[in-house]
Length: 640
Ligand code: BF8
Ligand code: SF4
Image (cartoon, rainbow, N blue to C red; front, top):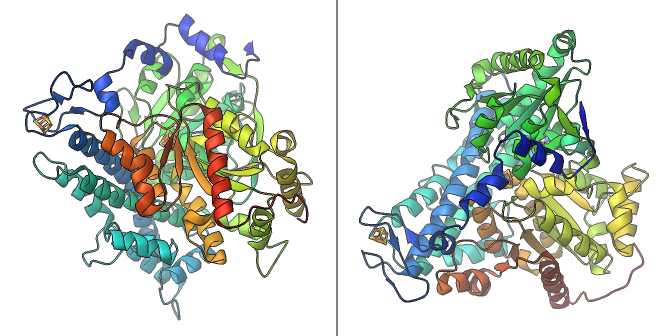
């Protein structure tokens, strides 16, 4: 194998150049200059009289052919992004809920209930009477109750929205008319009102977008919670990250996408097929690695190492040592197919709604999921025999990570310090200033930014200022890849008082070292875990979410799903930083609503700042303002 000690993956980018393979960064360069109308959101393709474009300099047309102005066009385009994001996340949740229903009705061949305690807690939360019912009856009611959030006719708010946020917040959203009774209707509503000649009022459109985005949130709650029932609630787990987790002497299979229904089965069947791989010459057997949010799901629950987040997904194949990439849905670059064809790598698609030309399609339906998973592993072992060892180049660096911080595992850990009031160690340390506040990092990588740069730069600054960081999605991937999710990172980057708290907690957890300064809470749908923790803190203090010294950041935001998340985060009252301007600048009105008007009605708002150093400073300022408003301005660094 050729050696590559460069942990930045540059060697693989160079390799791609030598092999004349275009990567995402090459395609980006070829795409330049990007369309200015599209970037500002003022291109409309909603009907075939157009496409229409508004001249941002005021010299050309200021209205489309139908008379829609820039405000209407920008708002329509933006809320359609929110609808797409909501559809993606909530369909994921619906698949999980349907699977739980099949398990409850004992018609599932491949899945079972792994966390009965969580199921009981959910039933209680949903006000389901569990008296005298067995586990399967309760699971059936939980599944039906959750699926009702996708189909309710009555005008009451979705169960998973109303049972998971503080009452004050729910009342505020209801008064504003943005609570929803039915996730799928909220998406239909956006597609309907943005049809040509329907809603032309930008503010009315944005409010509908907020309602739809709260559907995204509702779908995430369902995804996360019911996945925990089926696959287990994450507990702290030690693993590794970076492309170096791909092993030269193993049959390497990457699982990529979002839905744990696929990856869990693959991980399950691997153990029984290890011998076959060894017989084929792979001394280390079969090695599963994760990419994107599927990677986060199996990392948290199974300790599977993380090879890559979004932007470097193509490089996993460039290592020349990947036998198969198995994908489900979302954030899968279609380019993978072409790149895989330059190697021995098999690309498997597994979902009926996510096929890629050139890939092998093997659907993982419940009734034959295990057989198909075995077939995928078998073909991967076959592919190993075709591996060209001359083309193998695996970057050597890999980082230790501690992941698996579900709300339950955090509360469990804290209860070792205070059994009666488990949240008090966190609350006390926020009040006395040892922890100044919390930032939840979420969202994607974007080719417009050097991969992971904004995440890492901001985190170092925030940690030095004693701010605790939670992370999900590709944000979590960025921190995992850049050695910010282990005890050494706490010693290196955390301010003194934060370090003291994390050291105490790490010792209680039996690590004999500090907890990491960035806590990995999971995939993008697991942003619900961050909300759950924040809601527990807010309820304990009898305040609303916007009063907490809590902010969110998606410094390398890219996808429509992330736009939906950002909108509901603001709707829940939490200011949200984004490091890339969404396509709204063509309408000063829409830009103003997002960056300031929203604050007046829901307390949360968007902070757009491209420079990570400046963004960190702005977030610190917001946290300090929130502390001052709560009258917890103390800077005492003692008394943990
Ligand atoms: O859902 S963070 S690039 S992988 S959209 Fe996609 Fe963005 Fe990554 Fe996970 Ni979330
Ligand atoms: Fe043009 Fe109006 Fe049609 Fe959009 S809806 S393409 S602005 S005519």
